[in-house]
Every structure is written in C-alpha cells, then in structure tokens.
Image (cartoon, one colour):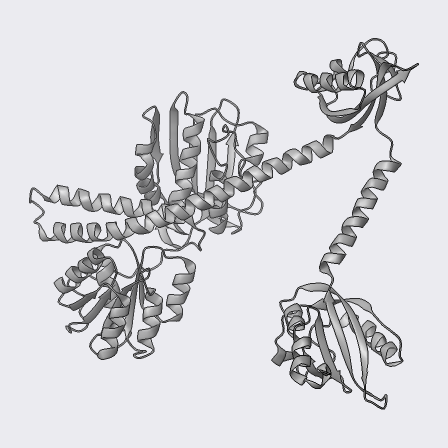
Length: 637
C-alpha cells in the first residue's frame, strides 16, 4: 500500500500548494517552514521569514497579546481559531483567520507549532455589507412613508395622513389632484401608474418632482376595492430629494470623469504629435539659422530667411504648449520679464481671435522680473484669452492686457498670496463681455465647472490657470458683474535678476582650440545631419549614426575614438539614457549631451543621475547646440 506520509517530496509539495497560508515553528517560536500562500498574503519572501522569531513582522503590536493568549490556549490543548489583523509588507492591513495547533512527537511532547492563515477580507466585506443592508432596511421599516393618500377615480384626494408645511388637509381633499403639485414632464408617468392601478388591478410606481415644494418623491400606487370593485387608489409617497440630488451629483461626476479620460487621451495623442513635430522643426530651425547667418544682412533673401526662422521659433513655442497640455510636469522656472513675455505671448494667439475683438496692451517700460516657467505663463495667458473670447463671442468687444507692480502686506484687506508680503507683478486681463454673477465667480476656478453648453468646453481652463499660478507662489482673482465684463488678475512675486550665462557664439565651441570628436546618434537622419552641419562648421569632427545599437558597437570597438556623445532620447531598440549608461560603463568620464523632444521629469531625473552634461529640448536653435557642446567639452577637463 502506498504510504503518502513516507514520501517527503509529496508532503512538502502538498504543504507548499495549500491555498491558505501555512507556517511551522519550532519550540522557540522560530519559523522553520512557510508556504507560498503565506508569502503572498504578507508580501514577505520565504528567505525573510525562515528563521524569524516571534513577534513576526506581519504582526501589528496591538495584536501581540491576542496572539500570545491564543497560543497558550493551543498549548493547553484547546481548539483555537481566532481573527486578527495582519500587516502586509507594503504597509496595508488585512483581516485574517488564524488556526494554530501544537506539533507533538510520538511521545506526545510538544516539538513546535503549526498555524494556518486565511485572508478573510472578502468575508468581512460581505459581513459589513449585510450589516449595512440590515440597518438600511430596518430604518425603512421603522420609518413610515412621508405621505399616505387615497385618490378617487377622478384623481382627487379623498384622504391624506398629513400634509407638507403650509398646506392644509381642507385645501386638498376633494379640491385638487396630484397633477396640481407635479411638474408637467412627470404627468405621463403618473397617469400611466394610475391607469395600471385602476385597470390592471396591480401596483405601480413612479417618481415625481413638485415645483411648489422643490422636492422629489417616490410613489407606489395600488388599487383599493370596495364590494369587489376598484373605487380608488392608495398612494404611498416618500420624499427622496437628497437621493435624487446625490444621483445628479454622481451623474455629473461620471460626466466629469469621462471628460477627464477624454482629455487624457487627447493629451497623449497631442504629446505624440508634438514629439514628431519637434523632430521636423529641429532641422528647419537650425538650417534657417545657418542660412540667415551665411547671407549678408542686405541680401534679398535675408527677410525670407528671418521669417522662416521666426516662424520656426513660434512653432517651437506652440509645441511646448502642446507638450505641457499633454502631461503634468514640474515647471522649469527661470527669471523672465513678465511684461516682455506677455508682449511675445499675445502675438502667438492674436491670430486665433476674431477681428471683432480689439486687443490693447498696457505694459511697463521697466522690466518686472519674475521666476516663472515661460511656457506655463503662455498657457495662463492663452486660457484667460480664450475665456474672454467666449465672453465676447456674440458681439465682440475689447480685450486688454496690463502689467504693473503692486505691494502686498498682511494689513491689506485682499487675500494674501502663498508667497506672503512683498512686491508682486500684477497681470490684469480685462474683457468687455457678458460678465459673471457672484455664484459663477465663486466657482470660476473649480475643475470642470463651465457655463458653456455641453460639448463646448471642459471647464478645465481656469482651474489650470489657478493651479499654475499657485505653483508659482502667486494668486489669481476675478472681479465681474453681469453685463459689465470681467477682470482676471494674476499676481506673481517679483524676484531679483539672476546673472545669465551667455550663450557661446557659433564657431567658439572648441575647447582651447582643440577639435572635438563627436558621436551623434539619432534615428531621425535629418536631425543628426543638422547637428553634424552645425558642429562641423565650428571645426569639430562628427560621426553620425541612426541606430543606438550600431553606435554602441562602434564605441565598444574603440572606446577612446570620441570626446563627446550627443544622443536622442526616444529611438527604436534603445533609449538615449540607456545608451549613455552602457557607454559610461566603459568610459565614465565621457561627456554626454541628451536631445529630447519630450522632456518629462523621469527622463530629466535619469539623465541627471547618469551625469549628463547638457539636455537639449527639440527643436533647439544653433546657439543652444553650440553652447551645450562648449559646456560639455569643458565639463570633463
């Protein structure tokens, strides 16, 4: 006969495969065996648990006494099963059913313990649901309906148990019908329910809204018989206004969630398109820069080349706005003149506004320096302009952008910006549109709040403005009245002017006159070639490869053949940061420049961790490339 228990492999396989957790302890309380299920339940590996002595890491301290008492009862021979809460390694808690037992040798002496552990989260959830359900139905059973009425075949009240405040029984009985208290759009459902009760001799239900009471009701109607004939209708009515408003709030939330998911999808698509546009714009920007420098200022082509270059710069800024829309990232702040930035930004979106809207600028002659991400400032301005456009869409009007310096102190009556007391640059965007009432002003910056028709807006524009401004230590307020237009005021703290590092001039990026041997890797050949053209015009030697795998192979054959690596981040087969890591493993001192069309925070963090000297965001002008190479060449001296 086959003896299962004399086959250790089968026994161990059985224990390991149990669906419930199992732990076996020696007499000291040290674990000598745990199965896979226990490891999965607690998040700890077998290596972390074997040899561990109680108390174990998944025991909460407040459960020590319960566990100790249970094991004492077990040792005394009592059958013990108890519930307690365990810790998962990730910090989460879960309820467990523990069944300990004593392991004894053939003489009956205890040699250790065994305990099974079962996750009872689902059982607890069901138990709680049952308790909640019982409480809910008990509440319903113990509370009578708000109204009990009887209606005759002409739909007139013949009995009411009590009435709403301000309405007497005398004013109802024999004089009015439920239709007099119900919104017209619910009359059909009510009549159908009454007809079912009168003609089909069964109960029916409907919901109704009373404009007079501003309340919602749930109604159950049924036939009343006298001498075998249906003579009237009983109506049990419960007020459900809170429930209906909660359902409406839920519907709004679901709509907002769908809008949010739609915006995420649009953002992902926009980010992908923007990344491709950056690869297209990089050679346009660089070649037009090279061409305008090569042509004499008086040449007939000079205006056209400058126009191409300026258009590429505007396209680059537009792509940056698209990328900012497509993802959340930490702002890349630098010292900027707010007035000058507003002047440049307004030019970007003026063409998107109808000619019926006139634009005026009131900007200071002296700079007002703020520490800000200029791309996010552009987005703030664009969103405020879009909001003003919608307010003046029907009849046109005036849109004014003004910037001035203001002082904020704790004694002022206005709300205090996050940065506290001090000097602020105040940007005011004023329109002559339809204006807003007090309620609209109060909710203007709420996410998804919009006064536009469904499908005409997301309600995110002003909430994005609010978020960006708060991230910059400022605040945004609105002042408006119906028919009087609106003024949005953004206050940003003024900062000291930082010393800017001058960009290297084209042709000045050699390190002490030495030519740099540059390896340029980009799967977009047009981008790689423009890098080659610019750097070779500065006297450097550039090797271009479009495959990071091939580049790594070339480098490994002669690791000292290059002084500098310039690589794109997003490429087939290998990311730029991975290529840098592989190359740096052989030559840690090699200078590296990373080009990216999508500078997300993770990429920047990874590049900094790898010691990348410079990060170039596509598309970049020629001076930025030359300056990056100049800096990278000096960084390894």
